[in-house]
Image (tube, rainbow, N blue to C red; front, side, top):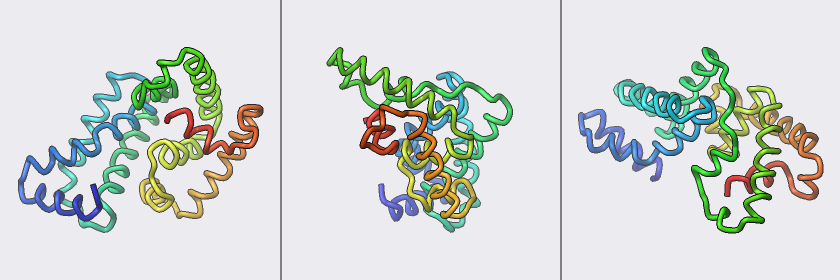
Length: 196
């Protein structure tokens, strides 16, 4: 869905069209649920947090001015709720292996590849958990959720340069932590491979 289509949906929602909100929900529900899983570590809390996020989105759309793309605003609302959840509970992160299972199970058809993927996912997850929360947040949003530098900056309310700096520092740290798994690949490629 394009930003223009999203803006049209928002206008329809603001005028009371519930079907428009259902379309917006369909477009973002899976992505926001995955983000919630990264912060909660379990399905029940992730479902509750996702519901809480979309209630906040629904009620907040009446005040949405359009200063950013609706999708960026939705991620901002979601991150605020996720960060609040982390502040209150400080849960374990959802294992990357479980997040991979949410996105694709095609690789499980090949047992050897399955073992390799599980080992790589465990190593990447361990490395991600050793990053600072600020570094992990930019990696999750940029690399795992696919947001642009500008969108991440808007969601986290930091300058774009800060996002780039945190990513560079995170990748340097991931390169050190992943050692032999990185070889000629960048940590970005390794993280991307574990979820494709």
